[in-house]
Image (cartoon, rainbow, N blue to C red):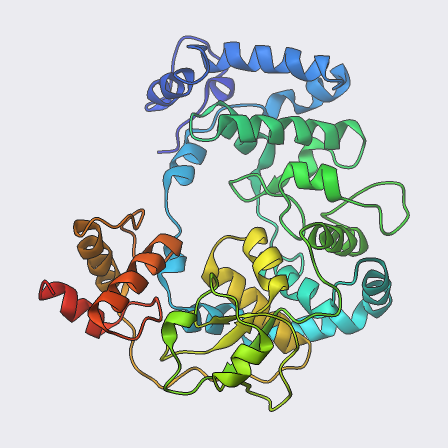
Length: 404
């Protein structure tokens, strides 16, 4: 049964099942205040910061607590237990590739202007556009104001989402969107590139010249704003971001990984070559093997590390977005590796548990190979004399099981 809020019930004395617990949890980090008391104080603070009475009245009915949002915020993202190849096959598929090419053609003048203004290639923007919302086709239907209000009261990230809620009100106040327009995913993102409200305020631009920043309905505003944000993250115009390479079998795998930077001369001396036969760029890069030595291999340049991993911290998502961008810019499909099977999610969890028992901080035991897990895996691979590619495989798991 869906949990109803006090606002939905219209009562102050009767709470739906589970709401009392959620609100008391929120009160623990809000000076003991109930949701209603906290909201009253927030509204006063918003008004003191320049939010108009008109905006507060318009947003008021949606500024309510939703226990379902708290549950979703506590959940994990099991999609990222997939391997890079599994995830990219699904997300960077041929349909999305062809649709992206059509979008680039249809918006050629906008992309040309963006390239001149911000230095960001069409493929980079279009890959994000397709992955985030299927080019504006799936924006989400949740009540954004309610979601952000809930997360601002809840204890997990109250300071962050208090700022996001103020930003939502600013968007309404300046006439860019109405409360009814604010629909999206449960975590409060808005528009065709799924900007958080503060990013909407800070980086949203009126790129179609109609006097408003509408990142929901205006393709030009959405694309221009995304380019401005990418530029802000440190995009280096004219430089690559991700390039597929071939790596010799005798490569010293401990020199792979995004934390190891190699000069172009080092890469050449180690036998690393571009898959397409073109010369390596004279820029330092990292050997990036998202699925270990048996899977696809890339060089990751500063644009990847500075921009892609800031846009989304998930290595699988970021690598998929960067790979799709290369395809949209004309690169061929990648080699998927030598066919050696990966550990499944349960196998990865077992590796994480065994590493944790050895004293490593791998974070949550979730089957997701994050930065902590990769660092621990590499250290154990080095200790055991295994190829140190920072990726779990059956050989590592067998060694850990044996207590080596």
